[in-house]
Image 1 (cartoon, rainbow, N blue to C red):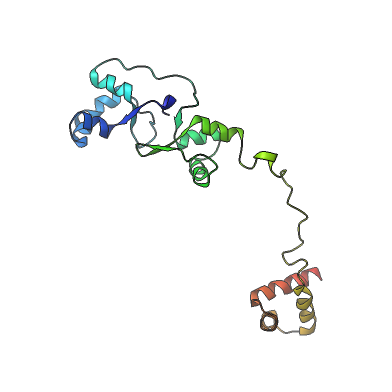
Image 2: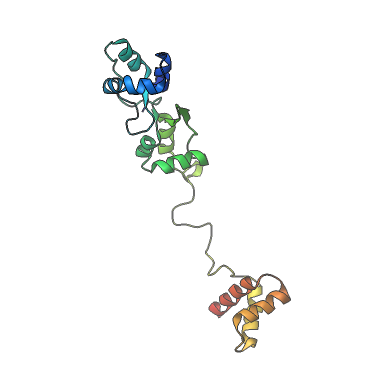
Length: 198
């Protein structure tokens, strides 16, 4: 987490400020630096540090304390956001793509979300916008017994089945498709529905 959207820095920028190649800085200076300055995202492959703490370490001064407690301007990564919302990190990324959560912002290659946005999503869960959505377990109306309920072609399919005798259903369906249009597979489904309702 970046507390209160404080300025941050990564190791490439630290090396640039020190005027040394990043590989040299990582080999020579990074181990001691990492011991003193904690990454703001320790479980991430992106090593991002608080700028004030990094500068204090490089100057040989004591590290300033980071602000404690939660704040609306805190920036959280996908895993931290997922923990707040009670979902997976991949769901957080999907929410952002689908517009259920803000797009967030990218800091040194890491996608982050303000705690205020996350709290807003937590207080207004998906499917509970204005009007509250449809009550759980209720559809838009009465359910059909099957997909072709009320389809006028059912009578044609039923009549063809009654007149067909031992003719294979596939042949009947092919003949109905040729005579009335539609696909053979659709007429097979219609015949199955007609047989079921009969």
